[in-house]
Length: 459
Image (cartoon, rainbow, N blue to C red; front, side, top):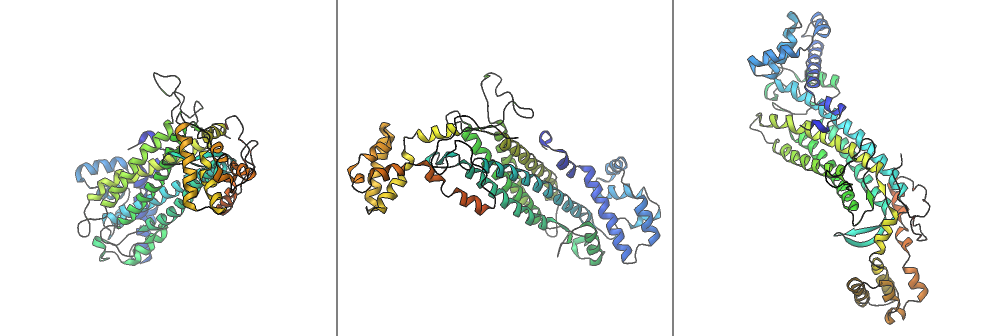
């Protein structure tokens, strides 16, 4: 459904040709299982394994007559065989083949997504280490809160992607099940041993119990996991979009390089828009919608109906293709993102020292002042700085109540930006990766200002 954004490996997983290949794999595995149970003669199995082929043109002609996909498929395969064709689809019902093959597709898609998650994590880790000592403004409600490490922002995203890897692992186990249990799952026409032998050949576990289908809570978990990954990618993209706003301009998507946007507007030549991040945000909405549909597919009439089938033909490939594309896009954005430390410091200073309000309040409390009084003193000066454009630090240092408890030297030490980076390395150590080198000019524990030029993407 999103052909413009599809990438070859994932597109192949969900192609019709690959689905038919998997259907044939399931049918051949079932024939081998019947051979193990001494039902299919050895000579017939040898002929089936040597000659069984799927002909798409013949399938299409059969489908025009039958309007049934599996009947058309088995007739196409049977045409490549002789009398031994009677063993194709022996004892099976359509969803024994289709649902088992669909599980194989979801396993393949999960592995591709996991590979892309690992790639993104590698880029996030590298750039988090690069900017561990780069001060930026932490914001809550969109308003200045306190300074923080820009590397910490990237490390937080890295840890979230690590959680998604665990979810993918659990999801892979959940969808890696097959079903060869015959009509309504009773095993009346095909014994459980055939299911066990077939699934073993395919690298799947037998569903412990089934009816006419593999239960759709498994498929819903698959799409929900993709939706969670998409939500994180949207979160990252939204932050980049916000930080690229002209008024903030602390980071910038790659622009004008091969593979990236080089024209921002048809009418305004100056525009450099966060178009890639906006694209990620838009696709996240698509995947979220598919998650709702996947949940609605869980409830079917009795042992099954096909209300889920038409929806799954869209949502499973679409969600997989979208998230695969989003991960690849965000990896490129993070890797090529320009970062502007001087602009970050300018934005911190734009609030004229207000970011130190909590530190001053805590110092007054630690010196013995009642917390309520300390809060009121600091807030009064903060509001004056906010409303009248005065410098908060100057107001605090001339307050007699503050001066009675805190020496000028101690007051000056409170306005040290390095204070906000004291424990960032502890967090990085907790995450399990090193801190990297401190870049010249970054604000380290001594509070040095960052260097005065942009840090472009490192290749």
